[in-house]
Image 1 (tube, rainbow, N blue to C red):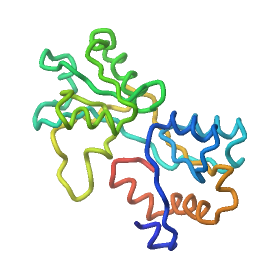
Image 2 (tube, one colour):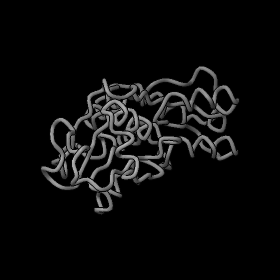
Image 3 (cartoon, rainbow, N blue to C red):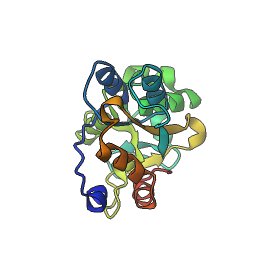
Length: 209
């Protein structure tokens, strides 16, 4: 909305897992810009000739949380992960979703990867992982802070802000794709992401610009 107000351009958004978007773009999907949840996928697209050289940059650094739809269920240290009360933990597919890979980093750092393996419920993306917990199909989900701490609205349920020492930094890069190379709106969108207005919005949603 802020981009449209500032430029008059109206973007058409498609959301999903970063890995799936890589496959679609490599297969010829006509996207103009990719906002990835990692920095590796834009580098791959550049190397494969699907993106414009020199256009990639980090627009945000993501924050991982362990979330439950139940208030008071998640403690401030994430000790609930080892609790017998937990039967299912939802994560995004670590093979295609950077937040899922970060979740696995946390489980390994806590020495819980083997014990929790039978309890893991894998979604295609963090949006699906969130839905598993929101609907009660999982007691816990590893998701992005931006999904649970929306500006102007109290956070639903309970969550543990995972220390960034427990997982690899989630650097999220944007890149101009070959299909959008001659689209002035695509370049305007990337320019907007680098500006103060966009950075302020991202901070409000728990991202580090």
